[in-house]
Image 1 (cartoon, rainbow, N blue to C red):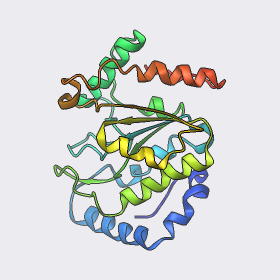
Image 2: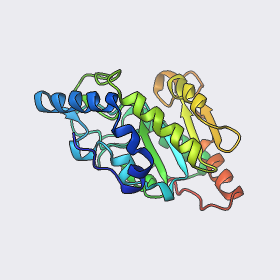
Image 3: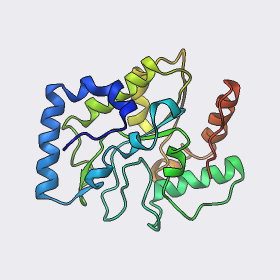
Image 4: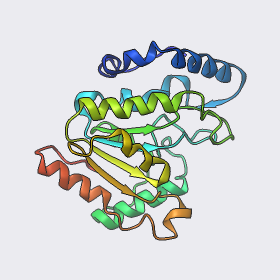
Length: 222
């Protein structure tokens, strides 16, 4: 794996790329991609960073790992390719936006439109083997993405962190809550949402209210 990442992120994270764990992670990912079908495509592994340069960053939305079904993952958390059926968690995200902001349910599940406005759609693990959920966990990606969250917290100002579900909520330990806005709720997966832990969190309007309060442009969540 060759690390091709937006230059603004490279300047912030280059020390991570030089550490032994990242070298081992690189070897693991290269082997997996050469021997198995893996997602997302190699050129899209760092898509979340490439589509949201540091200077534009307003929101961090943390997922766990990429979709493992054929043609789904595009390198952005919760996002799928244009024309792909919306997975259940994404359906519930869109339903909450409908209720929160009175917006129509979108046809496309490609969230690159959010990324281009400053939403870092970051998965804790950036790759996965086809049809094997969580198969690339524990290989070093989490160390890297924890470092990303810490670097954003340390060097950024007034970022909104959206932490959904138990896994994401643990990342609050990496965030300076005195200078950033952290919003937590249950996960949008049906297991959580159907038990009342997701719907009604109003995270999308709350994010925009916070951005307005600090003089930044809102996110168009359509």
